[in-house]
Amino acid sequence: MGVATGRLGDYGCLDGTGGCDHSGGRGGRHGCAVEAGRRGRRVVLIDHARAPGEKIRISGGGRCNFTNRHIAPDTAPDRFLSQNPPFALSALARYTADDFIARVTAAGIAWHEKTLGQLFCDGSAVQIIDMLRAEMAGAGVDLRLSTEVRDVRHDGGFCVETGNGAIRATALVVATGGKSIPKMGATGLGYRIAEQFGLRLTEVRPGLVPLTFAADALDLMQPLSGVSVAARVRCGAATFDEGLLFTHRGLSGPSILQISNYWREGGQIMVDLARGQDIARALGARRQEAGRVSVKNALAALLPEKLARQVVARAGVAGNLADQSNADLDRIADAVHRWQVTPAGSEGYRTAEVTLGGVDTRDLDARTLAARKVPGLHFIGEVVDVTGWLGGYNFQWAWSSGWAAGQAV
Image 1 (cartoon, rainbow, N blue to C red):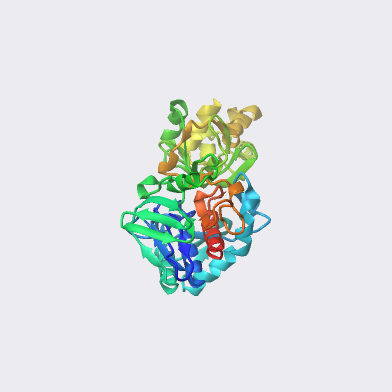
Image 2: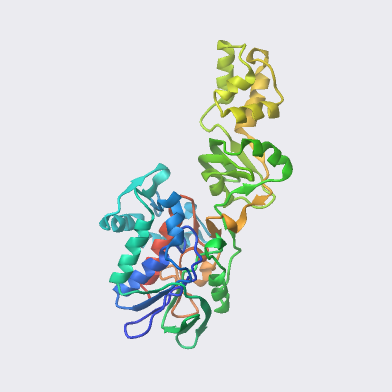
């Protein structure tokens, strides 16, 4: 998607291609259009999708994790990945999570807070789409769906060639999102437009994505497909305490999606499969009480049974608890708390919730999201090299960056 707007009396255009992450382009363009329209600009929002906000609709299990309460100036540089993490602060500080919460509440949408500050609609994510459509209608935004963007030119103004004719505008806001989930229309159009106008790109790759493993590791994981645990996952200095899910391809769940943003090919991750427990101490206490219980059954009281069986085999122990030395219990604990694995790759853009990297922030103004060398050209949302944690962070970047650009076009 992209956004182009014109001053009152000009013909404004929001150029949308439909490609956006679960949050990066999934709403920022609508918010930008609304802000520009409310400021008296004539705005056209172009989207090649047949219906608006499809990635909003599927986000958060259909309930849209629309923001996060823990987004604050002191936390943002740590929770948004970028070659220049402070870049996001200007927009996030001027249009905050509280600002969007107030907007949702004013629209009569009931919401609730889940773990780690994540906010969801009580009902359907469609309520957020309906809110944005109503706001666009009220601001006079011309929404054009099923419209393919074929070319963009700059000749004093901007000319967007579409399958339904050309649109001219004095400003263009590119809100295409990234490459994630191509079956929903995601493309690299935003990156091509950036390069066309001389902007630099940082490396792009799938983010918030399940990790896959080679055959030897999969032999251990596939029998556990569907098993989930409360885990702690670490890669380098990054650590996440969230759920982990074994799949037929490898590992998923919130902790794995989060750590995937920090993992690089060839790197190792450390997994604690029983976060908050002390397995050696618990087994030692059980040994005192019921030494005749098998090691497997004792561990199965602390972990899912399938996982307990595999851990015991991996630790190379067998028999009853009474037969185990402290060193044996320590080996079991190591297999649980310090499981080291090396992913072979990820599931890629097919299932990635975001695209890491994008338009280099060195070429953008942090306050307006405008290209420094191309007056009137703005980039917002996921297409920019700003990627947030799982849990509403990317939605808020979409709302905030869209709002910032909408004040400037």
